[in-house]
Image 1: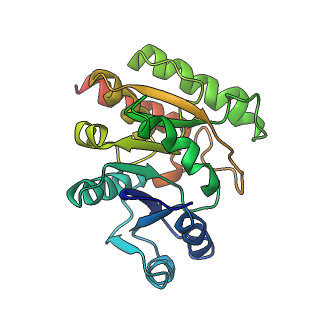
Image 2: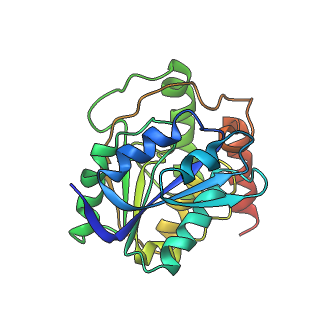
Image 3: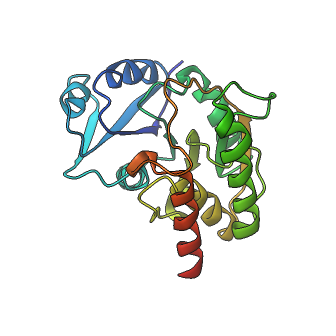
Amino acid sequence: MNIDTKIFCIIPSYNEQDKIKRTIRDVKKIIKNIVVIDDGSSDETYKKAKETGVIVLKHIINRGQGAALQTGNKFAYDNGAEAAVHFDADGQFAANEIPRLLKPLLNNECDVSLGSRFICGAPKMPWTKKYILFPIARLVNYVLLGIKLTDPQSGFRALNRKAMESIMIEQDGSAHCSEILYKSNINRLRIKEVPMTVIYNEYGQSLFRGKGRKKGGIQIIKDLLLAKIMQ
């Protein structure tokens, strides 16, 4: 299946030289327009992505996943995209689920389509994520942002052109997930969750440790509180 050329796939990447080509290859089967943002990698991510023939943008320094997504969103919007899919470079997401993610968007049922690990039951994931990080994230999103979803930190999402125009991502790190939800809510964008699969190749962020794209869960909450205060 090859989706309309007005749809772009944005792939933020940081030190993913071993996985980026496979990820691009899988996505190419579904979406023609792929934009990889090399977020200041210190390995050969940029070189290997360029070898696939897709568009590759580069941050000189590692700014964070949120910043990379904003760079990709702006590029896609400026080049006439009607929709943008956010897709991780590390092989956690399944490219063959992109059509399911886009379906409600293309049917004008929503402006923001979000993949959810929890719609079809309890997924296999590290227990600290399932029983500590995600319950805290749901509570924080509900209390601070007024948003109630099954998967509060999903990075597998699709935005239509209206959403791309309405949402400017200002949280450079992992707090961008909640920021996108919050700005969707205040801009009265329609949100819909669809089932998705996540393959955990590595743990990701912990409660206290991590930086950049894997910033610790406590730091994400601090970022959200600061953003809320500064509104």
